[in-house]
Amino acid sequence: MDLHAFSLTNTIKDQLKQNLTQIMLETEKLISSLDHDEYCILCDFETLQKQFNEIQSVAASYYLQQYLSPHTPNHMALSLAAHHLSERRHGALIVIERTQTVGSLIQKGVPIGATLTNTLLESIFYPGSPLHDGAVLIRGNEIVSAANVLPLSSIVTTQKKVGTRHRAAIGLSERSDALILVVSEETGRISFALDGTLYPIHSTNNPIL
Image 1: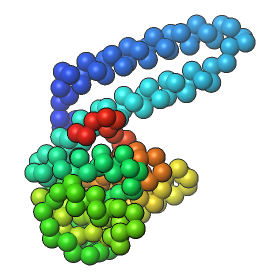
Image 2 (image 1 turned 45 degrees about the horizontal axis):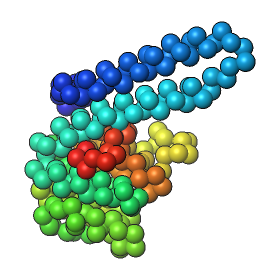
Image 3 (image 1 turned 45 degrees about the vertical axis):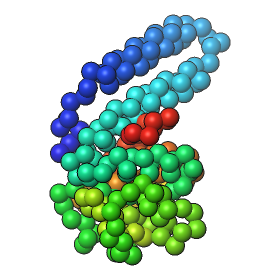
């Protein structure tokens, strides 16, 4: 399953069109500004980059929800937990197993065997918890285990901005069809890894990813 497997809703399409139109206007303004030698365009480039990142994250948020629904019946609890962890800047790494089992690809941690709830997930990743420094494995509606160690991606080892959690998420997604959620401890930013690619998602003031 890839990013073309789901169609965007009209609401998402309208939002993206609005954002893209704004970028077009800003781009036209930037082009006109190039005729003025004294004009500095660096700030405008930064603004455009932020706008493109925002559009990507909005689309990725929608796709994430579509990916989670068939494989995690209680995906709303997962979304709520990620939102709360993001607000508090509690780092997290959550593996959602899909059609392929990942047991042979990870270094197994502590068995949990409990029903998926947002409060349990949040407690696992609470700073200082003995289980917070690894990955949680979710299969269906069950938290199978915690403190699992994932294989790191070798592709991004030279990128200083990519932390260990993100490298681990990408690494497992390169070897399986699992979807891996990451919450950055430094920024609170939420991303998900799929098929070897990391996608930032939009969650500001919205507990439903």
